[in-house]
Image 1 (cartoon, rainbow, N blue to C red):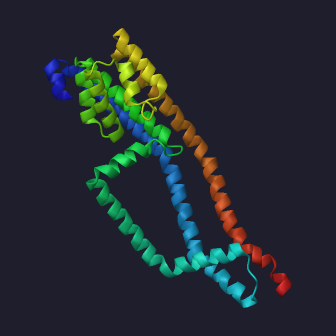
Image 2: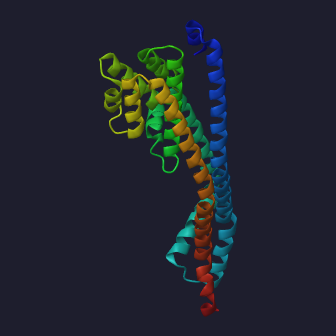
Image 3: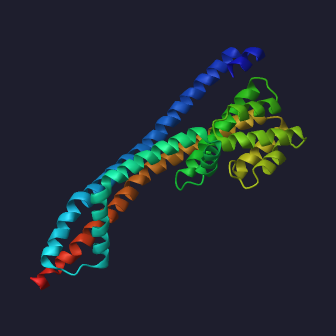
Length: 274
């Protein structure tokens, strides 16, 4: 981008824009980390607690039930069987997990198919898919607006956006959009042809960009849409950050409460055996 700015004589302006973009990206990164750190730590801690209970606590209950020769409910029997399996095979399970992570990381770096599959399905992830989609749209609009402000035509700008994209869906859509525009379609129609199901662009974004292209205000429309998407993303991150805490507390309470209830149900009937 800096090389393009030098050719168009807008290096100083471009450096200021790049600085602002980096600040915006850093701010967005902090918001994403703030929203995701709490649930990750909470879920990780809960997983370790439940794993410790399955390995060390539940086997002691099994000894109590065996001593009293109590008839156990099916749920308790299943829980004890899982705990026994984990206690016996925990080393192999951990080793398998490490191998699986290493293999996936290796395949990820070598296989474009896996990268494309993950990128294409990233926006369908519950709760977080909408955030990833807003972030990708915001980046696309910002980069294209910057290139148009640098003096490039729409075709060259979209080609460079495709080449510089780090998201496969954005890359493929931009490359296809370049082909459609080269064939004479206007931007609004080309967007509909490239993304008919709205997998990347929402209908409002496609409509506004189409209007901007027809009225000769595409760069201004892209800046405006980028700001709108940025505000929407910040708002959704705030809501997510506030709503995750009670949801996680409720979910963890149900999991651990159900685990304890399954263990203690047979104890309530031991008085009949004694």
